[in-house]
Length: 281
View 1: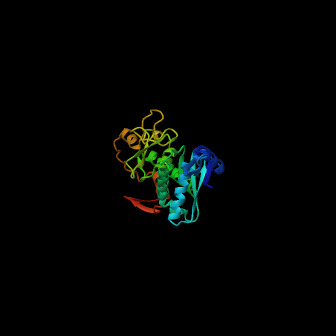
View 2 (view 1 turned 180 degrees about the vertical axis):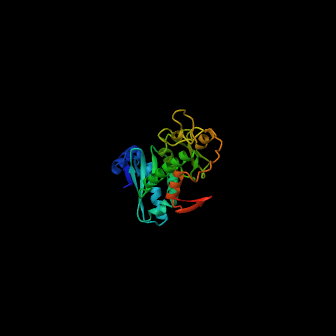
View 3 (view 1 turned 30 degrees about the vertical axis):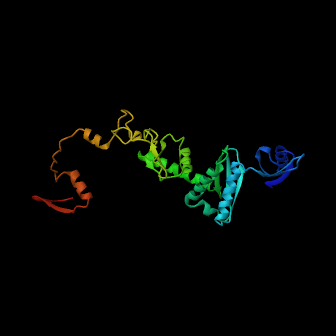
């Protein structure tokens, strides 16, 4: 019960009596004087209603919106430690979530405006449905890790698509402790997006870690010469090798015994003629 009518000798007594009947503190009673009666003993009749808190106004607004849209779902308020969470439930909840939560974010923004119209909220309001926020957080965290690895490996910044403040906050939080990349939000709404930038970290150390390219002479630390510390390349080794003049091939002695044995082993004919005489091998 959020409304009652009481009669008392004074307005203060009527408010106290109404607060007792409605079970709320006196500062939450909104009293409207209906009539006054009596000449000697005056009496005051008031209509007392309970003032809604900002979070209650938020829930009432969402339920009114659901009713106006003829949707089969309801909004329930949960008072958590760091926020007022309004949970949507019902078969038409996906309609209020929308594509990638666009409708959900829009309804949440309007709800904040209604809630803070008269009194300010002491905690933020989070509108959720079917645990969409949690599922989206897990998906974005995995995406952030994969793109951070890509940026660190290639040494080039990676730009993400435009996101709302909630999604950008998830990306920043997921990569806050990554020492290989940094994140930055650029642009203006509704095209504000995140850029993942690689840090100036050496790409390959002795263990083959990721980062920049290493020394100029080689392709990284794991390819470096351990003695000199400079880069090593096969072409440089070939260029540094001493050059020798080509040797003229010496004529072979056909009557040499060793050559004859090799010639026989490789399948030469048994009878061959060389010059003046014929020899059998």
